[in-house]
Image (cartoon, rainbow, N blue to C red):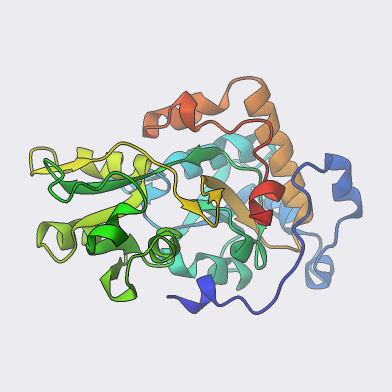
Length: 297
C-alpha cells in the first residue's frame, strides 16, 4: 500500500462538517500562508485559479479524449468554485494512493477524485461533506461463474480479487475473509480490467458507479457488473461517501465549499452536475450524510 495513503502518522479531529460558515472566521490558518498574503481560498480568488489533484479514474476525475479534465468531481469543482469567484480549474494527475500526500505537500489545493471519507484519511486531510454515497459491486465474467453476489462471497469461495492501489476495497476484502495473497492491487481501472481479462483475478471490486463506467468501455467483451451491495464490517454498513478533501489548515476553503455544496443540494442542482457521469438519485447524500459522520466510522 502507498504510505502516503495508509500509513498515517498522526490523528486529528476533523472540523464538524455541520458547522456553520461563521466558523471560518475563527479558523486556523497556516502562518506561512499569512506571511504570503492570505490563505488558499483568498489566493485562489485573487488569481482566479485553483489547482486540484485527480487520479484519472472515470467517472470521478479524468482527462477525456480531447485532453479536458472532466468527471463528476472536476465538473462539481467548476460549478462550486465559479460561485466562489474562481473561474479556472487546473488539474494535477497523481496515482490514487498519492493524493493525500500530494495535497499536504502543496502540489495542489484540493483532491477532486470522488475519494471515500474514512476515519484513517480524516487523520490527514479535512473532508468536505459528501457529494455522493455509493455501494459496491463486482465485475465478473458473463454468467458470473463464481456466483459472487455479496461482500462475503469472495472469501468464502477462495477467489482472487482485484482492487485499486490505496482504495478502501482492499480493506473490505481482507476483513470479509479474502486471503492477503488473493488480493491483487492495480494502479488503475484499465490495468485491473486487463488482469481480469487475462484470468489473473476472478473479479474487480469497486463501486457500482466505477464498474458501470468501465463496462461501457468494454461492451461485448464477455463481462458484466453484479448488482450493488453494501459490505458490513464489524456490524457496520460500509457505504462509500465520496467527497473533496482539503488541507487541515484550509478551514476557510472547506467551509466555503460546504456552504456552496449545501446550496446546490437545497436547490436540487447537485444531481444535474453528476448525472452525466452515471450518478442517479439513489447516490445523492441525505441530510444526515456528513463528513463528521463518515470520519467517525
